[in-house]
Length: 169
Image (cartoon, rainbow, N blue to C red; front, side, top):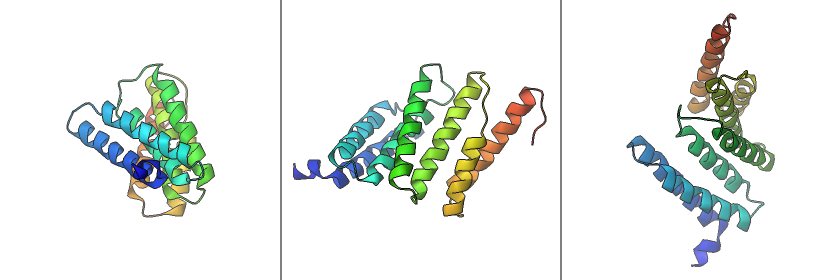
């Protein structure tokens, strides 16, 4: 029971539940229950040590996972989920300004918000997400997730411009 009060243990529990959520998603099982358990564990970790920036970053990653698993199954109700994930990511960056994962979470949140706006037919731009991924790569040039998602952001931005009758690039 003493481990339940340790923010590090709670953060680790949050990360474990997040991994279980991704595993469920990969196996076409419902990822919701493990991701909700992850969120609860992250919330406990943040409450027990608001100075632990790692818990803030992990919570942002869990909130982003909840949005990501929705895929293209989005609606107006998805907007608050994305906004919550973005706010959590920004809080993580403020707490850990040199943490690559904090900046990655922020870039991913900006990417997912813009992708959602595109999916809802709203005017948007990947510019902030692109800048975010570039910031991640300035901290860690070999971060392949950021390289991949930066390319995806450029591609989606170009497709959006073409759909609007503009020129890509």
